[in-house]
View 1 (cartoon, rainbow, N blue to C red):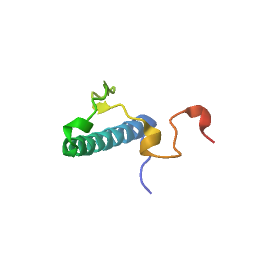
View 2 (view 1 turned 60 degrees about the vertical axis):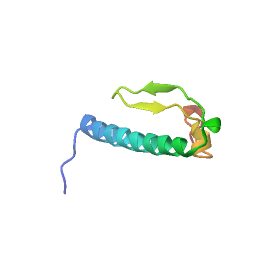
View 3 (view 1 turned 120 degrees about the horizontal axis):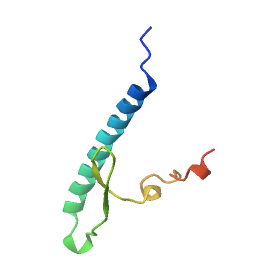
Length: 75
């Protein structure tokens, strides 16, 4: 049996993992944007998380159909 980490440490590990994944996704998106003809490129607003990661603000329903960030729609 392993030791149980305090909730704060588990949260920090999950948060750091999500931050790393967000950076990877934004890198992929940026690379794909560079492959587009410049006439089709759109500038999108950016925001910074508490960890200082800068990412594109995107429509998540477009990325993951059927998923919603609206907590009122959770089952």
